[in-house]
Length: 190
Image 1 (tube, helix red, strand yellow):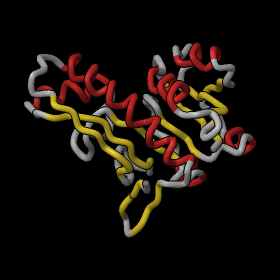
Image 2 (image 1 turned 135 degrees about the vertical axis):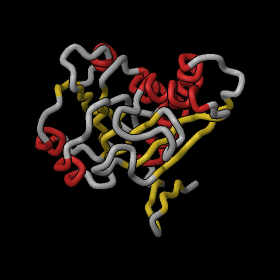
Image 3 (image 1 turned 60 degrees about the vertical axis):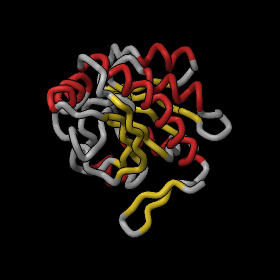
Protein backbone atom coordinates (compact mmCIF):
# COMPACT_ATOMS: atom_id res chain seq x y z
CA UNK A 1 0.00 0.00 0.00
CA UNK A 2 1.33 3.41 -0.99
CA UNK A 3 1.05 5.99 1.78
CA UNK A 4 1.54 9.71 2.26
CA UNK A 5 1.96 10.94 5.83
CA UNK A 6 0.95 14.51 6.68
CA UNK A 7 2.76 16.05 9.67
CA UNK A 8 3.23 19.41 11.35
CA UNK A 9 5.65 18.67 14.18
CA UNK A 10 8.42 16.41 15.36
CA UNK A 11 7.16 13.28 13.61
CA UNK A 12 7.12 10.71 16.42
CA UNK A 13 4.07 8.94 14.92
CA UNK A 14 5.79 8.96 11.50
CA UNK A 15 8.84 7.33 13.06
CA UNK A 16 6.67 4.76 14.81
CA UNK A 17 5.01 3.87 11.49
CA UNK A 18 8.34 3.52 9.71
CA UNK A 19 9.76 1.33 12.47
CA UNK A 20 6.74 -0.92 13.10
CA UNK A 21 4.94 -1.46 9.78
CA UNK A 22 6.80 -3.81 7.42
CA UNK A 23 7.89 -2.01 4.24
CA UNK A 24 6.51 -4.93 2.25
CA UNK A 25 2.99 -4.08 3.48
CA UNK A 26 2.99 -0.30 3.54
CA UNK A 27 5.39 2.02 1.80
CA UNK A 28 5.55 5.66 2.85
CA UNK A 29 6.18 7.47 -0.45
CA UNK A 30 5.84 11.04 0.74
CA UNK A 31 5.86 13.13 3.89
CA UNK A 32 3.83 16.32 3.54
CA UNK A 33 3.80 19.27 5.91
CA UNK A 34 2.26 22.69 6.23
CA UNK A 35 5.62 23.92 7.54
CA UNK A 36 8.78 24.28 5.47
CA UNK A 37 11.00 23.66 8.52
CA UNK A 38 9.00 20.72 9.88
CA UNK A 39 11.13 18.59 12.23
CA UNK A 40 9.54 15.40 10.82
CA UNK A 41 11.32 16.11 7.51
CA UNK A 42 14.56 15.05 9.22
CA UNK A 43 13.06 11.61 9.86
CA UNK A 44 11.81 11.43 6.26
CA UNK A 45 15.28 12.32 4.99
CA UNK A 46 16.86 9.58 7.14
CA UNK A 47 14.54 7.07 5.43
CA UNK A 48 15.08 8.66 1.99
CA UNK A 49 11.41 9.62 1.66
CA UNK A 50 10.41 12.59 -0.50
CA UNK A 51 9.15 15.62 1.42
CA UNK A 52 6.69 18.22 0.24
CA UNK A 53 5.01 21.31 1.53
CA UNK A 54 1.24 21.04 1.29
CA UNK A 55 0.53 20.97 -2.40
CA UNK A 56 -1.85 19.70 -4.98
CA UNK A 57 -3.89 16.54 -5.09
CA UNK A 58 -2.21 15.79 -8.40
CA UNK A 59 1.19 15.07 -6.80
CA UNK A 60 -0.39 12.41 -4.59
CA UNK A 61 -2.38 10.97 -7.49
CA UNK A 62 0.80 10.83 -9.63
CA UNK A 63 2.45 8.75 -6.89
CA UNK A 64 -0.68 6.56 -6.80
CA UNK A 65 -1.11 7.17 -3.06
CA UNK A 66 -3.73 4.83 -1.65
CA UNK A 67 -3.88 6.10 1.94
CA UNK A 68 -3.18 9.47 3.56
CA UNK A 69 -2.26 9.33 7.24
CA UNK A 70 -2.56 12.50 9.30
CA UNK A 71 0.00 12.04 12.06
CA UNK A 72 0.05 15.28 14.01
CA UNK A 73 -1.08 17.41 11.07
CA UNK A 74 -2.64 20.57 12.46
CA UNK A 75 -4.39 22.08 9.43
CA UNK A 76 -7.86 21.22 8.20
CA UNK A 77 -7.75 19.11 5.07
CA UNK A 78 -9.34 20.96 2.14
CA UNK A 79 -12.70 19.61 1.01
CA UNK A 80 -11.33 18.75 -2.45
CA UNK A 81 -8.74 16.43 -0.83
CA UNK A 82 -11.47 14.77 1.23
CA UNK A 83 -13.53 14.26 -1.92
CA UNK A 84 -10.58 12.94 -3.94
CA UNK A 85 -9.49 10.48 -1.23
CA UNK A 86 -12.87 9.51 0.25
CA UNK A 87 -12.40 6.93 3.04
CA UNK A 88 -8.68 6.95 2.32
CA UNK A 89 -7.62 9.69 4.77
CA UNK A 90 -7.20 8.76 8.42
CA UNK A 91 -6.25 10.86 11.43
CA UNK A 92 -4.89 10.01 14.85
CA UNK A 93 -6.41 12.11 17.61
CA UNK A 94 -4.96 12.24 21.16
CA UNK A 95 -8.24 11.63 23.02
CA UNK A 96 -11.24 9.34 22.94
CA UNK A 97 -13.55 10.89 20.37
CA UNK A 98 -16.20 12.15 20.22
CA UNK A 99 -15.08 13.81 23.48
CA UNK A 100 -12.34 16.44 23.34
CA UNK A 101 -12.39 16.89 19.57
CA UNK A 102 -13.07 19.69 17.13
CA UNK A 103 -11.41 22.90 16.05
CA UNK A 104 -8.51 23.90 18.28
CA UNK A 105 -8.41 20.52 20.02
CA UNK A 106 -4.90 19.32 19.28
CA UNK A 107 -1.71 18.69 21.20
CA UNK A 108 -1.56 20.04 24.73
CA UNK A 109 -4.93 21.80 24.27
CA UNK A 110 -6.60 18.37 24.23
CA UNK A 111 -4.69 17.06 27.24
CA UNK A 112 -5.38 20.23 29.23
CA UNK A 113 -9.10 19.89 28.52
CA UNK A 114 -9.00 16.22 29.56
CA UNK A 115 -7.08 17.07 32.74
CA UNK A 116 -9.39 19.95 33.65
CA UNK A 117 -12.46 17.76 33.13
CA UNK A 118 -11.23 15.37 35.82
CA UNK A 119 -11.60 12.43 33.41
CA UNK A 120 -10.12 9.17 34.68
CA UNK A 121 -9.36 7.71 31.25
CA UNK A 122 -8.06 9.11 28.01
CA UNK A 123 -6.51 7.51 24.99
CA UNK A 124 -6.13 7.71 21.25
CA UNK A 125 -8.62 7.52 18.41
CA UNK A 126 -8.01 6.80 14.75
CA UNK A 127 -10.83 7.97 12.50
CA UNK A 128 -11.62 8.65 8.89
CA UNK A 129 -11.33 12.29 7.90
CA UNK A 130 -14.39 14.02 6.54
CA UNK A 131 -15.15 17.71 6.02
CA UNK A 132 -15.71 18.43 9.74
CA UNK A 133 -12.93 18.40 12.36
CA UNK A 134 -12.69 15.05 14.20
CA UNK A 135 -16.04 13.88 12.88
CA UNK A 136 -15.42 10.91 10.57
CA UNK A 137 -16.19 7.28 11.40
CA UNK A 138 -14.04 5.93 14.23
CA UNK A 139 -11.75 3.10 13.12
CA UNK A 140 -10.02 2.21 16.40
CA UNK A 141 -9.56 3.50 19.93
CA UNK A 142 -7.35 2.56 22.82
CA UNK A 143 -7.94 3.83 26.35
CA UNK A 144 -5.43 4.41 29.14
CA UNK A 145 -5.89 5.03 32.85
CA UNK A 146 -4.92 8.62 33.71
CA UNK A 147 -6.46 8.73 37.20
CA UNK A 148 -3.08 8.96 38.92
CA UNK A 149 -1.53 11.56 36.66
CA UNK A 150 -0.87 15.10 37.83
CA UNK A 151 -0.61 17.25 34.72
CA UNK A 152 -1.63 17.59 31.08
CA UNK A 153 1.98 16.84 30.14
CA UNK A 154 1.85 13.49 31.94
CA UNK A 155 -1.38 12.67 30.09
CA UNK A 156 0.29 13.63 26.80
CA UNK A 157 3.18 11.23 27.44
CA UNK A 158 0.86 8.35 28.34
CA UNK A 159 -1.41 8.92 25.34
CA UNK A 160 1.53 9.28 22.93
CA UNK A 161 2.74 5.81 23.90
CA UNK A 162 -0.70 4.47 22.95
CA UNK A 163 -0.65 6.38 19.66
CA UNK A 164 2.66 4.72 18.78
CA UNK A 165 1.00 1.31 19.17
CA UNK A 166 -2.38 2.04 17.62
CA UNK A 167 -1.38 3.88 14.44
CA UNK A 168 1.00 1.21 13.07
CA UNK A 169 -1.59 -1.47 13.87
CA UNK A 170 -4.35 0.32 11.93
CA UNK A 171 -2.09 1.16 8.97
CA UNK A 172 -1.00 -2.47 8.75
CA UNK A 173 -4.64 -3.59 8.80
CA UNK A 174 -5.39 -1.11 5.99
CA UNK A 175 -2.50 -2.54 3.96
CA UNK A 176 -4.03 -6.00 4.39
CA UNK A 177 -7.47 -4.81 3.26
CA UNK A 178 -8.91 -5.54 6.70
CA UNK A 179 -10.53 -2.16 7.46
CA UNK A 180 -14.07 -2.04 6.16
CA UNK A 181 -17.14 0.16 6.52
CA UNK A 182 -20.38 -1.73 6.90
CA UNK A 183 -23.77 -0.38 8.04
CA UNK A 184 -22.21 2.95 9.11
CA UNK A 185 -19.71 1.12 11.33
CA UNK A 186 -16.01 0.66 10.76
CA UNK A 187 -14.66 -2.81 11.39
CA UNK A 188 -11.17 -4.21 11.58
CA UNK A 189 -11.12 -7.83 10.48
CA UNK A 190 -8.80 -10.41 12.00
